[in-house]
Amino acid sequence: MMADLADDPIVFLDIDGTLIPFRARPAELAVVSADALERSDEMSSNPLLDRLDPADGSRLLALGCQLVWATTWMTDANDLIAPRLGLPQLPIVDFPELEHGLHWKTAYLARWAAGRRFVWLDDEITDTDRYWIQTRYSGQALLHRVNPSVGLTGHDFAYVREWLAAQ
Image (cartoon, rainbow, N blue to C red; front, side):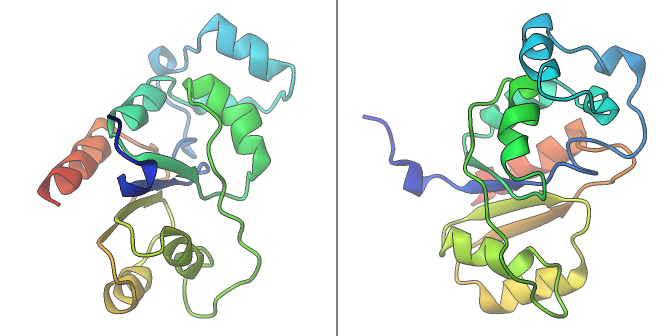
């Protein structure tokens, strides 16, 4: 019997600086399957999409977590990013208001997770966000800052897998 999705940890995914690094990736990583290109090129000619690493999709799925978009890309994340990474349509966190003193996503991700274990992958996480989660969130959470120049790396995935296994 399959485990209920509500029991799985959540991985909140940012796009800019996380899945799309600010610096171009080496040419060998900029290879996207023809099928994914065909589906998404009809929707966008954004040159930054070439910075996606198509292998990130299978790496994210291998974490065994519920993947959730936590990005200003909103529905474009499912339309443009998911097909290039081989990901299914994912839930999207809606960020209606800003919280003062924190990253604008922090409190909303905590509310969305509602006590469930979660990982937040983003390039803008600060110690203020970590402290807020540590002191106000009832569940376990890993706030992992991704280097925005290079985006997600094998080291980032290894760190997240270790954290998930330790929990």
